[in-house]
Image 1: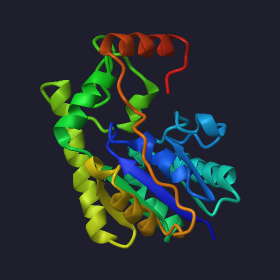
Image 2: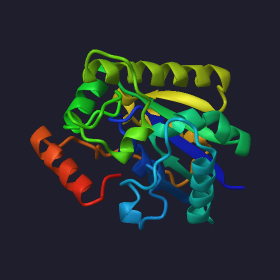
Image 3: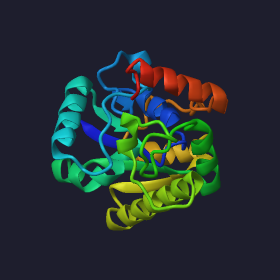
Length: 232
């Protein structure tokens, strides 16, 4: 039976690089943020996201769609931050699933989020006047906070507290890896060993692919995408 491997991380934590790395392994099919229906070159963009608050219908559609697209791969999966709340639901359906969660330092994640989310704020409730509303907002929890930066930091705290709890509860299924060591051969070996990839034919190297655009340009692109109905 094919092995399901889920990639996790708060966001701004190397998820595109991780998806590409896993997808280059022999017999593998991996995508980024549920873009399983896209051609290979576009599988590292975004597809139909799942909401942070677990949604049974959305979950069922995601799993069925991923498995249809991945057949007949021997290893398959999705890499997305919003899959963390579905960890136990995934294990209920696929008990042998493995979860690779990348942890990047808090301050770096928050700073990257602030650069990358110009004009938007998915971590706080708002009326759409100061911040743009996007469908992507539902992929994050919201927090009571004095600022966007504080709310993004609270999201990081919640995310990795939950991830650490899953690692303690399911040590054979869930493992945290340090973002700062992703390019090390030893880390990549450990990831592939944990996921169960055979030693023969492995591909190594995790190219950095998810840098941020300058904030003014990012804001213009977000506004344009929203106006054209292209918002993820």
